[in-house]
Length: 263
Length: 300
Image (cartoon, rainbow over the protein chains, first blue to last red):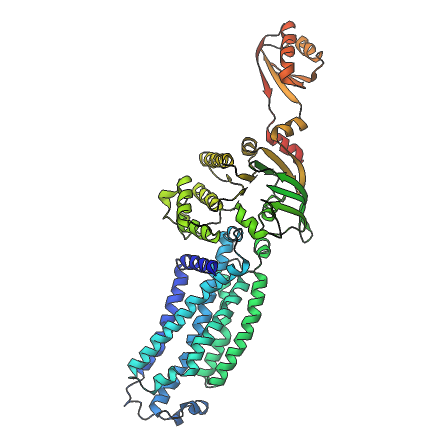
């Protein structure tokens, strides 16, 4: 366990000196937190929203508005479009981080001296995974906390805050988010074993966000709306996916393969 | 300290190392020479438990390769072909990371010790990217030494260094030997191997020769004495060739190049014979075959 931490600390010390990675870790959460808050701010005062009712919403969303005022339902409709972005962070940040951390080691040939130490392959892999996943999870949770605080301030602690911090979204952010981060790290490790350029690895690893983006656009276009069942199924699906991906990534991340086949 | 028996490594259809048998004694500098693609780096990787052999066995510091790999990693240090430093980290951070991975007890103290020993202490806070090639190599050597390994594998330690830096590195390797470390030195610099190594193995996938540089010279070449004369005459060559201990004689410019069994014993008689024949001797020296000549003869 100690060595996992030693590796993670080294990764952070090194990768955070890369401005591009730093930009991704800081800018993306900042943007994804600010955007829904700005929209919420510009939506108008409660008086201006007074004419809004659940009937104005798409039918599939109107069910989610049960018990809400029309004004809150309108706000929730707009804000919920962006809630998925908080799940995009644990996918995108580790993909960038792991790509630079693993392919970077390949290009600078720093892996061989590390593999010559009494560190196990699992410790090395875990150290890199922790280093990539923790900042993403931390950034997601922090952004979501700031967002919730912003909602509380802008709506003066209304029903909307209760919706945003409902068990559905808390589960999505606290549980599904880290599961997505593990998937992103595993994919980045697999891609890194074949790529020789961190930028190429990052671009390919970023494809991991496509299913979530599809979900995002499906919701924006009114095709679906995220509900409890969907989040639960997502959690189960990603857990199964994580187990498979982790097993495959660990298989690829073997000492001999790294030294002789990672070109 | 290192024993290999039938050590073989195959990558698919490619045979990289073929049945290597050798023994490296404790405290010696062991030269491992061979052309590119001869399997030197693969051998080092097998012996330092980085990759496993396809067949055969090896023991390093008493631990068996493939079965006690972590113990080997604890007892061996490796300087890889490329220094492989973290360019964005300081020299101190580069070393402390490896010291922690090696479970060094006093990380800060050990890092300071080697940074001072290799003259890098004043640059400890600078990132490795700003270091010259020589400084990078020194930092990589320090990294290999941090956990005080019994065996040190050095893969081309002076490659690409300027003569002054290369000399410093060679001196440091010499000091390590004085401290009782076993050093497995892989190099293309044959002069360096000749000066540093107690014994030398020449490989080209398989082992071609293994002995001390002097013994390899004796095995492959006669000992040759060069007699510089003020002038040559056919009588001199005749007088020399009559001697029973002379294996060969050749005249080159104003020199007689004479192959002998044992120069220490034969030289006085040889000189007497030449003086008796009227030769005017300027000086006598032994033609020492370079390790390069030995190496090329073995490899070809």
